[in-house]
Length: 456
Image (cartoon, rainbow, N blue to C red; front, side):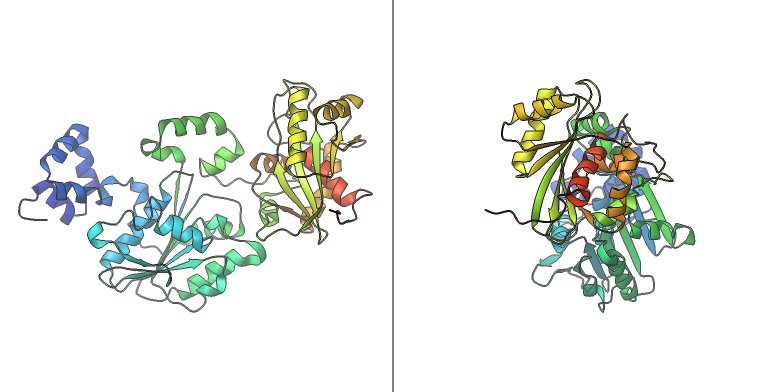
């Protein structure tokens, strides 16, 4: 900036203490007036003064810390906070060697480096680092460097040394066989450059082992925890998005986790736990399905409970995979029957398993009317929902059932099934969970549970 630099902006550029307070004290009118008094280069530089624009919780803690954990809802501004912290370290510490670690290399590049709030986007053009994708490296003009790593490859972090690290979405890291913890441990052992190695971890919370370990360290004074919600950043999010999130997910378990940044606790005595479901999440390509069924728990009325529709498969290795949750709510018999038929067609199901206690033969008639060729088997519940669910929960404990993706509403219901017969989950009835139980009973515990190869 030249000699004609605005004095207030010069103060903001050179004196970082109190910048945010000074800028906010100007008010909207004062900020607009200041903006009109700046020349184009000054206006361009103004957007890169992070201390001015950041919310206090997005700035690094003043206390001496080793680990800073930002555990907050989606849209909070975690990625921006992480990218700005890395930029600050790189600019002020030429000797910095920074590790950028994500769930995969593709995510590190797409989100942390090249994303809308990534390091390249938030860096001033005159001081933007050079990104060498073939070397997985960012290099700043002063000599600071950052290397890209995948948490799915823990051994890639064994050996390299770093002074700082930014770990993004650690609750999403591959936890199979302790891989996420191994990646974290290898990273920590390599943070041995400089006088004060530091790690920033940004994540939406989920009940995984690594999250529990880090949260258990918060009281050791070297680990700082910042919590926040999606709504903290509402001023920078589309109004319709915020309204839609509130209307759709307010009060739900998914909303508490993904928007409010709350780690969901397990109910004592539940047949399923969040930890068990996270460990069952498939992290590898599934084996070839040898049999696919659609489990259905029909509603009693069109205005009452949901129709649980769960697609599951038996795999070549003898395990089962939950493939899809196609459940529908407040639908007429014709509507939910069409949803069942569509699920069976989409997944090329061998059979539909439907509970017939409510409606008897009518259930079969409605399903066949929706799709005349649909193979349907009606089952009658001679025991309570929870009693039927207990052997299925045992299959999860034995590692014989995997989830192909996250199924928040289904998993909320599973975690509400209590030993002893009670249901303490969302809604009046665990319709999705019951449909899953019927499907897995057919695949894993029924007479036809033995794998067979489908002929073409």
